[in-house]
Image (tube, rainbow, N blue to C red; front, side):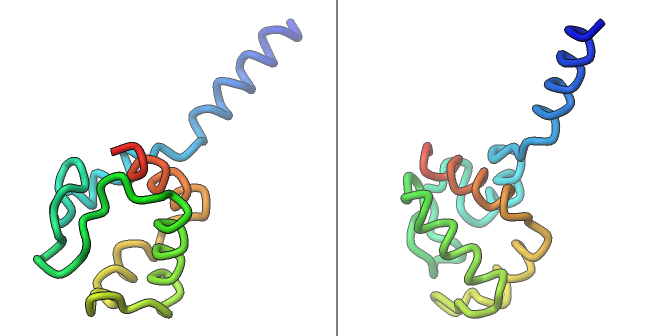
Length: 97
């Protein structure tokens, strides 16, 4: 009985983990499926970018303190609802592209 409860708990915990690929799906239109595009021909290519740098940038956009390439307002709207775990997950995904 205890093993079943532990298995159910672990299954629930893994479903609560942020899925970087799923989060990145809304980024594809501007950044490309593999982060290979310059968003709106303004931004740098993000493919393979260091996760720590991405976390820093996304947090800056979310806080409204970063306006890189004039994309601050657009990006703030894109990341406003992301949690810290979501931001880390998508940053890890981008680093692996």
